[in-house]
Length: 63
Image 1 (cartoon, rainbow, N blue to C red):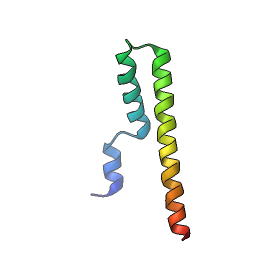
Image 2 (image 1 turned 180 degrees about the vertical axis):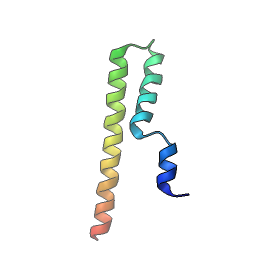
Image 3 (image 1 turned 180 degrees about the horizontal axis):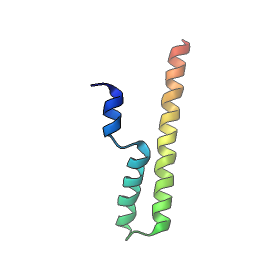
Protein backbone atom coordinates (compact mmCIF):
# COMPACT_ATOMS: atom_id res chain seq x y z
CA UNK A 1 0.00 0.00 0.00
CA UNK A 2 1.36 3.39 -0.97
CA UNK A 3 1.68 6.20 1.57
CA UNK A 4 -0.73 8.34 -0.50
CA UNK A 5 -3.37 5.63 -0.13
CA UNK A 6 -2.89 5.57 3.64
CA UNK A 7 -3.16 9.37 3.87
CA UNK A 8 -6.51 9.30 2.05
CA UNK A 9 -7.99 7.19 4.85
CA UNK A 10 -6.60 9.32 7.67
CA UNK A 11 -8.08 12.66 8.70
CA UNK A 12 -6.00 15.71 7.85
CA UNK A 13 -4.19 17.61 10.57
CA UNK A 14 -6.82 20.34 10.34
CA UNK A 15 -9.65 17.81 10.77
CA UNK A 16 -7.83 16.35 13.75
CA UNK A 17 -7.39 19.85 15.21
CA UNK A 18 -11.12 20.48 14.78
CA UNK A 19 -11.96 17.28 16.67
CA UNK A 20 -9.57 18.13 19.49
CA UNK A 21 -10.89 21.70 19.75
CA UNK A 22 -14.50 20.46 19.85
CA UNK A 23 -13.69 17.89 22.54
CA UNK A 24 -11.89 20.47 24.65
CA UNK A 25 -14.67 23.05 24.20
CA UNK A 26 -17.26 20.48 25.27
CA UNK A 27 -15.46 20.20 28.60
CA UNK A 28 -16.34 23.89 29.05
CA UNK A 29 -20.04 23.34 28.13
CA UNK A 30 -19.20 24.14 24.48
CA UNK A 31 -18.73 27.87 24.40
CA UNK A 32 -17.85 29.11 20.90
CA UNK A 33 -15.14 31.45 22.16
CA UNK A 34 -13.41 28.49 23.86
CA UNK A 35 -13.71 26.44 20.67
CA UNK A 36 -12.07 29.21 18.63
CA UNK A 37 -9.33 29.71 21.23
CA UNK A 38 -8.70 25.96 21.38
CA UNK A 39 -8.56 25.62 17.59
CA UNK A 40 -6.19 28.57 17.31
CA UNK A 41 -3.88 27.16 20.00
CA UNK A 42 -3.87 23.67 18.45
CA UNK A 43 -3.19 25.01 14.92
CA UNK A 44 -0.40 27.25 16.23
CA UNK A 45 1.21 24.30 18.01
CA UNK A 46 0.94 22.09 14.92
CA UNK A 47 2.37 24.82 12.69
CA UNK A 48 5.28 25.32 15.09
CA UNK A 49 6.00 21.58 15.14
CA UNK A 50 5.88 21.31 11.34
CA UNK A 51 8.16 24.35 10.96
CA UNK A 52 10.62 22.94 13.49
CA UNK A 53 10.64 19.58 11.72
CA UNK A 54 11.17 21.22 8.31
CA UNK A 55 13.97 23.35 9.74
CA UNK A 56 15.71 20.32 11.23
CA UNK A 57 15.35 18.41 7.96
CA UNK A 58 16.82 21.25 5.89
CA UNK A 59 19.75 21.61 8.33
CA UNK A 60 20.53 17.92 7.97
CA UNK A 61 20.41 18.07 4.18
CA UNK A 62 22.70 21.14 4.13
CA UNK A 63 25.40 19.28 6.06
